[in-house]
Image 1 (cartoon, rainbow, N blue to C red):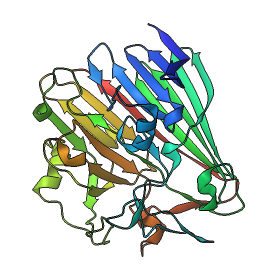
Image 2 (cartoon, one colour):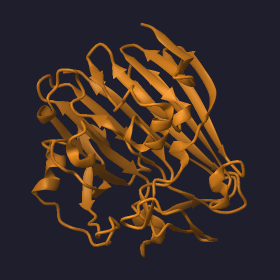
Image 3 (cartoon, rainbow, N blue to C red):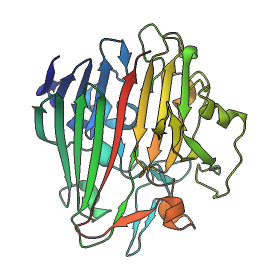
Length: 336
């Protein structure tokens, strides 16, 4: 089997092209260290949304709805407010209708390639973004940090991690989300109505008209329970911010925390696993007619810094100066 991790050009931008067994992947540092493409070439499984017709500028303008983007900070902040233990920051309002800040900035920055190499049977890519006073957002949020990304592609799929390190003298809020854009269908001959979704959801968080949590849990209804039975069709109808706690369940006799997408015709699956740092799910499909959906794992709840809840319930946490934290995920195919 071939294993490779090489720096190539994509429309005049450097990307890292990776190969391992039946998988190929493209990492785009220019797009916030996005996994721009991942394919199981032997089984016709195309994991993530991609549009070759878009320019670099168009991709950067819509970075959260292509590939596998990492967001800092997740989802919405009410009135742009990010309330920390030692300071209160005000971010620009992006969501004009709800008057919220949205998705942060890290996924829109051009990151640096640190390494592209192969070790034994693992193709490895490492990228980095140094956030300091050279970033235009620093005037708004003057808290230095480093984001280090590692991508390991093997016969078992893609293992991904991001480490955030506080390089400031201030407290650094820690909140990570992946706005994962999974194709439905994910095969060239697949049927969107033949796609099913299982997600390890727990209690449901209702949202107000501004799409902010009310902090009143709801019982799961028949719609919600479709995630648990693996019977949810994730496209061709609107899924607009279904929000839940993230739980761990047994799948095939082992603990599983994540999402499983199944092509009914073949039985083949995309499996997406997250670690215990991810405490919440937001599920969204962009009105349902664009051939993709987003099971978004998040370390903190929407508007977590401003919720009247302790951190163990909202997921809000901070990194002290020089402190680091890493989250990991894995995505792969299962062939039936």
